[in-house]
Amino acid sequence: MLADADGNYANKAAFMKQLEPVAAEVSDQLGIDPRIVMAQAVLETGLGSKVRGKNYFGIKGKGPAFTTHEEVGDLMVKQKDEFRTYDSLEESVRDYGLFLQDNKRYRSLLEAKRLDEQIDALARSGYVTDSKYGDKIRGMIEGKTFKKLIG
View 1 (cartoon, rainbow, N blue to C red):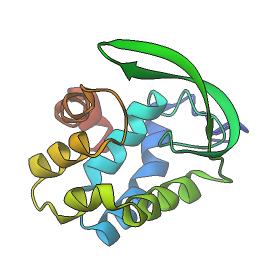
View 2 (view 1 turned 45 degrees about the vertical axis):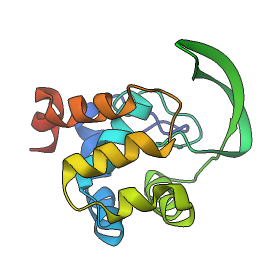
View 3 (view 1 turned 90 degrees about the vertical axis):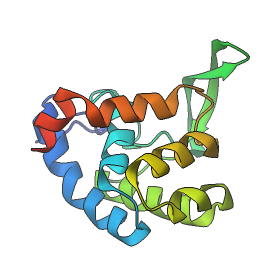
């Protein structure tokens, strides 16, 4: 078994191997760089090791409440919020794609052509409240660990 019942992976390489093909499929449908899809899943889950409800993108919605951190002013504040749950990693990635398509605030991300433009559009979109999210995604994509794991 690659992941436990909640979707947590003990092996980072196994997580990336499972993520990569569905991330490529969804990024192709969306017209965005697959590294953005993978970097978001990596960042949101600690390389697949901190997953709840097989939600690999931290998408909020009807579901169980978990503790999260939201940026309020200049502080990260703990709070509880409800998050969607999924039956599989693949279902989570595909729903992420639908989530981006169904929300107008991600239009600039989906219209951007180059990786840097896409990261900047994601950072401005309000996907998360973390004002450093774009820098974190960029750093993830440019980092040695990420590059090693995606080949």
